[in-house]
Image (cartoon, rainbow, N blue to C red):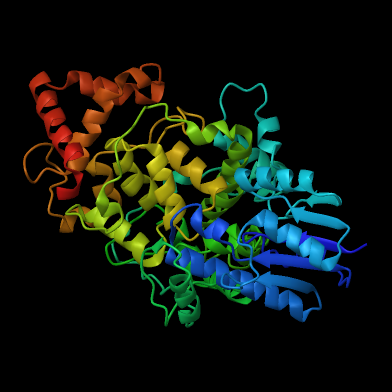
Length: 510
């Protein structure tokens, strides 16, 4: 039976059982498509990374004997749309069966179901063999429960998969070392330079230009450093274990003017493109920890494992439980437009200048920069979550909707009303000053609420609590802040709100 198998750009799992044996009757089809470059405006480094990773995946497996049809973006025979690519490949190969790996994006899942319904040959779908959980495992776990607390899911996952547990009890005596993972980096602990794999990508950058693909952000096309091959990604994982893991947990929430990556692994693209699996990442980290347990505290490792086994699987489960309605949620009814400096980084607020500037320069920011700087500001200024979603989905190299939208619309913007997070993640300048050195070099003062030099985060924070009071009246986690707001002098509140309105109406001059 001649079979066509589809591989999407984020399904680059060379260890998938599909590739255990070479079969001359199987043709794999991959394509660089305008459908995917154009559904949202992407950072140029994101497009380059996916095209490079796809091409290397195809080359590696072709060398092992697997037969591929691969359409580059400018191939004159490339139909550019998924349905036409599949039909064309089936016709040209005389295939009598079509198979695909289950997509992780809802839109592609629906599209492939529709395509299969239109075909007059046998069709089948298969698991990507990547995640720890099935699509609906989280939904089943929380069935009958009033609230979906991630910690409960995380502990179940640790026990089920035997990760850092002995007799169902956590190694080190605690399930969660989050309190130990909030240190400010003050420069005393040296940060190893990130692992780089410089390569010239002028051909792909020129391709995007010639084909008029609309992108944003910056790139050095003579020295593109992100790991995109399996060998490069495995080397990055090893480097993380040897050089960064000993201090990862301590400083995973820290931010600093001079350090873009600190002790973060930079493995999120490798994992979200499925070049590396979460299981091999976690097992490699744990093997290293057990071998070097005298040098690495358990809190460093648990903080890393929690991000992958906990949050990553949790967010995917929420996505498949709540879509497609989730994509339209806007519980706080925020409607403002994204300021222009999200596309330039040109703002006097140093924290945003650095976090957004870094995002534009590298297509990367770590989770606290995304959540408590950029996302915090977007929520306090009451930006439409549709606009926030589009920006986050486009700007980050690791952004695929299943992980982006739950973190953005849910965790960051609280547009889901508390499905993901039990309270909105908002703060004044105090938190930013506590976790970074951004405020020390800023035009604005982190201690002032009103006046020309007052940090915008301060008035915006109290204004947000005041304007959204009705939404939080039954949220116990917001009681303390609401009580503080109630105790504030009414004239002071008036001046704060006046200042906040001026900021919101004139975002691009701040």
